Amino acid sequence: MSDVEIKRGLKDVYFATSEASFIDGAIGKLLYRGYNIDDLAQNSTFEETVYLLLHGKLPTAKELADFDATLRANRRLPKEILQVIELVKAAHPMDVLRTAMSALAAFDSETNDNSKEATLRKGIRLTAQAPTIVAAHDRMRHGNAAVDPNPRLGHAANFLYMLFDKDPDPEEAKLVDLDFVLHAEHGSNASAFAARVTASTLADLHAAVTTGVATLKGPWHGGAAEAVMRMALEIGNPERASEYARGLLESGGRIMGFGHRVYRAEDPRARHMRERSKWLAERKGEPRWFQILTELEKAMQPYAAKGICVNVDFYAGSVYHLLGIPEDLFIPIFAVGRVPGWTLQVMEQFADNILIRPLTQYIGPMDVSYVPLKERQ
Image (cartoon, rainbow, N blue to C red; front, side, top):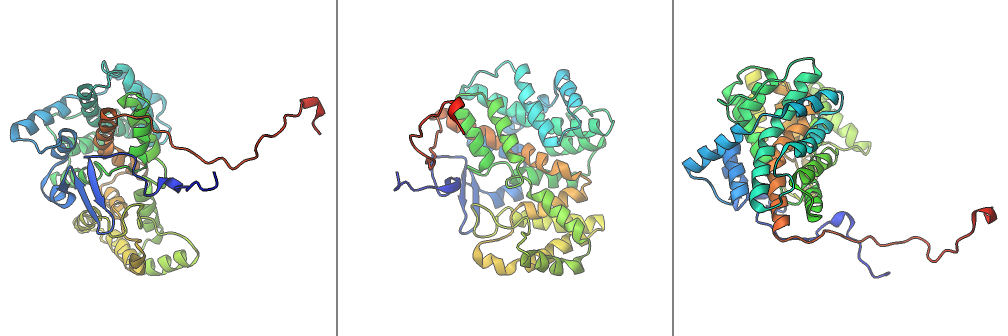
């Protein structure tokens, strides 16, 4: 077995084909179902993007209206799920989201139906319910009552409404909508791959999405936005940013929000968050956060030639912070946007399934003689 080639982290390994998304990391290009992320970011909505991902085409006006109505009709949580959230409200929001997502399986009549049609319906329900879980938990852990979903509002606006118990600013709702669009799908990343592994065992969609949420919690996957904002808060002043970056890099540290497993050029999603971060900082009268991030990006410029470029999470944290969203909700917001992507990945796995079962090369001792307990020294 000495000639076995180990592909650590399964890097550069293709295990399936997909119609979900295309990534060209060398030039920083991302397509959802063939559509450029720049076009979707500038022109689409989360509801329309979810329809595109799940149905493989852009909807007509009627199809979008019907789809939006279905999402709005499925936002409410069973009272038993609210009771579960209350019981575990002291946990990290990602743990609560994972637990509630799993518990929802007990209240879905189609949980064990893995047909394409049922999986699609369940994915739509989970997409609608995820923001309700996150918002309800945040209110309940602070001693407030959960806010019922508002059927008048779109997906992103309703999330802010449930979180803060007031009608959101329309422009800020559009910004959260953009964030959801940018995070909706991203190929075989760690959480999507984990969800597909679960699906390959013919477990149900709730199990696969729960796996996705659990995997996303890891700081090497979903935690960068939170880490970037902590770093910005620690720096505090734009004039300290360059010195901070230099000291951290010289000591062998890492500037979070830079580098990506796939991209060797700038993450194409980052530009949209950079623009909106600047706009929001100016609107809120708090330009220092954007200025700090800009100075950090300048300090990292020499590393761009090595393929270490800014990613979508670098500016996302400042946007969440300026919207008044707590740091530990940054990853759950990522998850809220990613549910349709996980659903699509699971649907593709079910459509042409094979158990995903890679190998590890054993390097331990061989044929060791067993020694009875009483004879061991």
